[in-house]
Image (cartoon, rainbow, N blue to C red; front, side, top):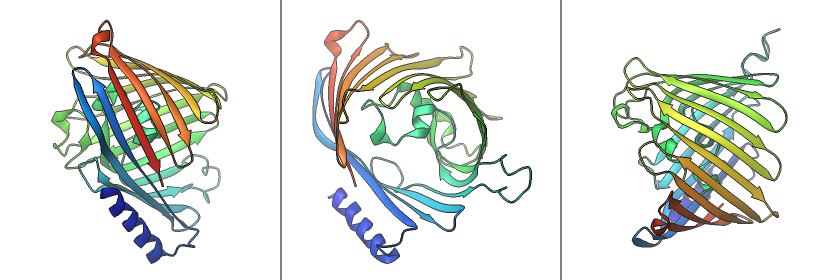
Length: 298
């Protein structure tokens, strides 16, 4: 029923804006998950339904938004305006800023979380350390690129955040972000970032990624500062045997839980994919969990 509602909204927006409008694009996804193990079984259930749209206002400015019909605490999941190359006409400085983003969106901390939608993760479950990251906030972000070096800075101050450490979700306090990345060659990248606040705990991220057309090997560590300075790590590897079959493995070094292994496959087809994962805590094979997920993209 929820998916029908999404498709109806998509059709209505398309008709109102013009189906042949080349400046407007719509997309979306829905996924269902089934699992068994860890002493429990749960039937296949709809987890997420997102509808995404963007419209070019001119050659440098676009607006984009996401409706989360199922799976998220707010119907309007994000809404932002992006201004590309704001210094384009400023001589000798046009290279400095790549884009400025204003609105409600993902703050610039964390590799996987900021680069992929939930349906695009290599594994069905996102890495454990993402629970420490703010997933939506209101603010402004500036991105820059100079040769192989990328940088980002942002200021966010929502009264009600989504995700992150519990104490800061509803505080309305200001958060300040800074991050950078360096392409060592066409396949190898290192990067990291930090979130600072006068009142909330500092959170940081470090990642190293080797990626080719068929494979990715990635390390990411996320931590926050307090008396013991905890952190959690993810080691990810994935390889495409064919255009439709991809093998995946992840090892998670967790701070507050047993370390976990995940192995699985992704079967990719037009407009969607099927994922299957086997997950088990280190040294506790009897507590293994089997997850399956069907993803539909439209």
